[in-house]
Amino acid sequence: MTYCVGLLLDAGMVLLSDTRTNAGLDNISTYRKMFTFEEPGERVVVILTAGSLSVTQTTMARLQEAAEDTSPDAPPSIMTADTILQVASVVGDTLAAVSKDISSRMTQNADGATASMLVAGQRKGGEMRLFLIYPEGNFIEATADTPFLQIGEHKYGKPILDRVVRPETTLSDARKAVLLSMDSTLRSNLSVGMPLDLAVIEKDDCRVSSYRRIEAQDEGFQEMSNAWSQALRDSFQRIEI
Amino acid sequence: MTYCVGLLLDAGMVLLSDTRTNAGLDNISTYRKMFTFEEPGERVVVILTAGSLSVTQTTMARLQEAAEDTSPDAPPSIMTADTILQVASVVGDTLAAVSKDISSRMTQNADGATASMLVAGQRKGGEMRLFLIYPEGNFIEATADTPFLQIGEHKYGKPILDRVVRPETTLSDARKAVLLSMDSTLRSNLSVGMPLDLAVIEKDDCRVSSYRRIEAQDEGFQEMSNAWSQALRDSFQRIEI
Image (cartoon, rainbow over all chains, first blue to last red; front, top):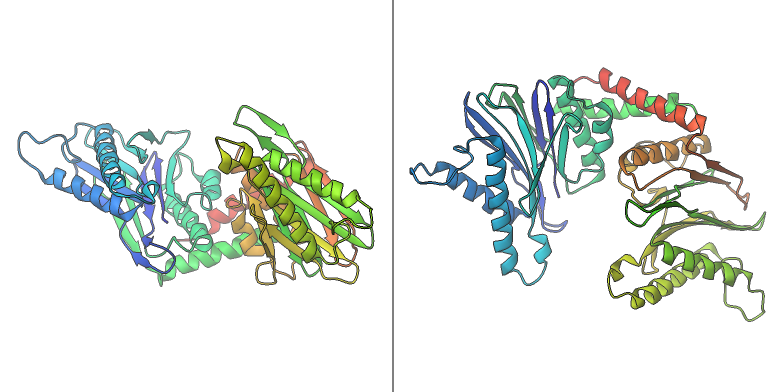
């Protein structure tokens, strides 16, 4: 399982993913689920992945290969597509093709060979955009009414986002919101695990403005997690029914 | 969809269910999902249901009919079984038989003809017990390590229970915890809806000690819901990262 979340705010985009991959509960590994494509100042695209590891790795490998193809007749890639909408199409088409390819080889569990992705990006002169790509390659986009998108184990961490995330939320508050959302998910689902990858893309920076890997023993994260638990318990005691 | 939760505490048991039933988003109805069987002071059993309405209604009708059968050769029923463990078996067997029966008539969506139930009860001289009955009729039991059980849409409301519910939690705090757990679920899943049914069985009372139906316009519930939202936002602002 996986939990990834992306926020599209007036001030920028905030992206967070876990790194746990498992094939059964007795086979747990750490894999990066956040992938960055950038030409700093010109174009930035960050992709977060959830689902079958063989599908996501193959998809990312094909996207990477296509992005490095500089031949004049190469089809539009993540690095050359005219718009971020077109980037989402390229990712969706590649994902759908890989899913179909892998599913066709499977005689059992063919339903399991799927994945979904978040694609966040901006190119110079364009708008920031955030898409959720479904396993079939179609997609939806974050808007002012719904400024966040989630993939994977999304339910435990949604209540806090529903309550505090608005387009005008500051990047600092947004970082806090996604980390608390992840904290609730980590507590409730063993198949979501540390370390975490946290990226912030400030508006019009067209690059990853800040990136941080948060390890299991990270003191700041532990303190925040404990303080939040304590604050919830204190609030609980104060509420009257 | 549905959300039902049961708590097994040192001081008693607290049970909460919503009442929304839907066949698609355009066909929403209100049905009671909490059913009480009692001989006050001698035996109390409360059943909460989630899943296919045709399965849960047929199961409850058969259980009710069996409980009213006073012939000397009648098999053990909810009202006559020697222990609450046996009550759980009777419920599980009936549920499994009804599910099988209804599934066998369906050519499409046979997977949908399932339901699960919570069974809470105590008989005079026995212990309080709380069971979760799976669609196949097998079951698990709440213990001191895991003092709550949920059926239906359980994820949104689990973080608050994880944080505050312990066996020594008071009945007053327990009522608050299940209502806040329901509040988070109501906000995030449209197919869980008011009114709510809330029952408390105090230890050794062997009856439903208090029962309350909470309507959508209930002022106390609205105030609690608003106060909790405000408390979460305040706590969020105070947390530092």
